[in-house]
Length: 179
Ligand SMILES: [Zn+2]
View 1 (cartoon, rainbow, N blue to C red):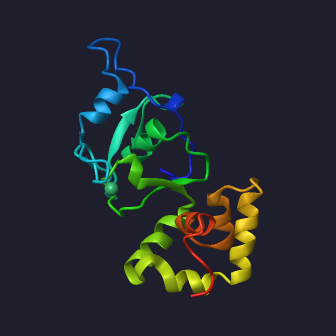
View 2: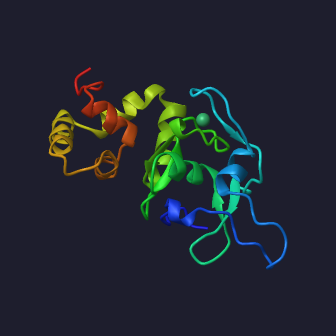
View 3: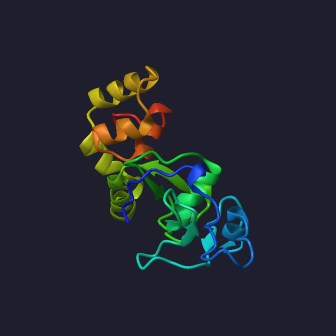
């Protein structure tokens, strides 16, 4: 299954029963939360249901053309934050694939996950990585582009080849070019 398909609330409901008989399926949200160990807002909320072989949780949903399997963290993102546009992935700040805490999820390009993981694992806070990627001119341009309101942080991130969290820190003034 591609990561890049779009997903919205309209695609999320319990799948239809396999035959016309039997109990009506429980609501999607009920089924979803019955498989989650929910903790404090800051903690990872881990999926206890079925997992994809790649380590992500999975839940059967109605789908656009009938029953389909959807990744649990993507469902969580749509339920709490909003639609996932085509071509975008839902990434984990916490690197915990089982986690569905919406506070740990962000929308990124397919490259963001690996880029984020690389900068977190190899370089604390991605600082050296980030400095080699962006000149001070880039940083000023990013601030101008973002304040123009035309670009999303995720768009600037893919344009400059850095994580969207880095763009967020730049536009909030938490990162400066000189250091
Ligand atoms: Zn988490």
